[in-house]
Image (cartoon, rainbow, N blue to C red; front, side, top):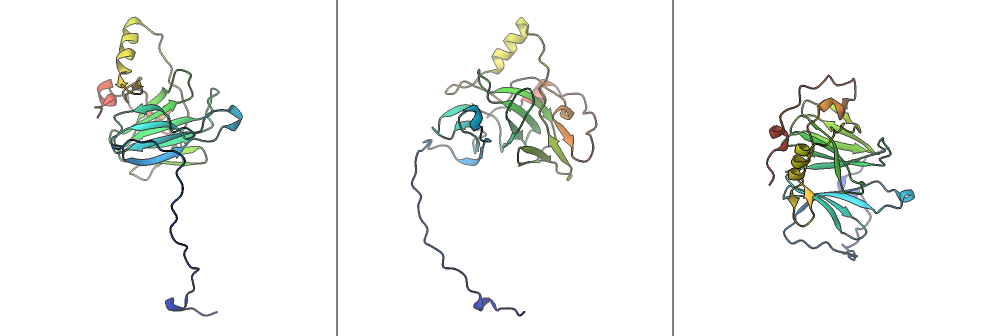
Length: 219
């Protein structure tokens, strides 16, 4: 066997660029999209085809791929990373994982709730990590090189009280257009309830930080 010089390599001719027809558009001149993550197909459930998006304005959107309708919009997630975790427990077919790398906040959202997306759990993790996904499994690659697997876990909800109801109502303030809660909705939970080490169980997380640390500022 011999080798060929670069000039002797024969490559198939490249076809000219072809513009594909557009079936539908979501028109928002000010929006600059960063990424789009389609949800797993759930044909047996008869549900709509969903996708999660992120944009340069620190927003995470939940869209119907078929109609391009925006079902939900989260605010205050600069450089957000999203992934779909499935299958989940408690009869949940899949959930949306949102990671805010600038704040070290990892959240699990149940998006198929009749009342709209509900935050199931949240955890403090390292900042500037990377969210990875493969065939329904989601992992968090930390700056140290450690890899944790994200798992479904619903945080226990305390019984509602008058003060608690007022606090929740205040936290639901968000987009006027989509009536979406901002990223500070819900309560604080410890990291080890949401992530576990790929090599060994994570050590028990430190005491959950105060709500002011988790909530952050919305843009």
